[in-house]
Image (cartoon, rainbow, N blue to C red; front, side, top):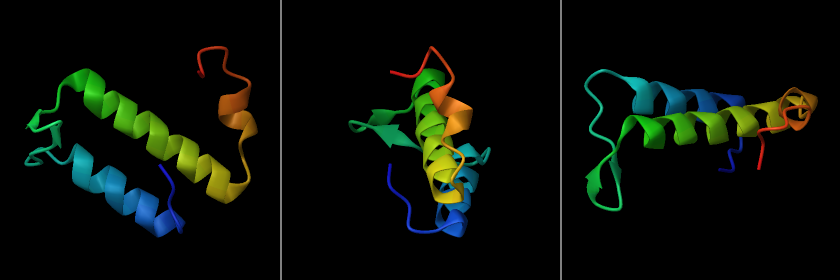
Amino acid sequence: MNFETVKEALEFLYSVNRKEAKVKVNGKPARVHDIQEMNREAIFGLCDLLGMEDIYLKDDDVA
């Protein structure tokens, strides 16, 4: 996920994580795993925007 601004990334995270959100993946309701992956990608994007890639690059689970 590529965001132009921190605000854009935060707005995305807010919209996806609202209780009322109707998020779909491939036309089907998103599962918890799908939302977690969206959050993870948005966090990576935020880290990139803030110059803090080291937060996720030190994680062995990033792949």
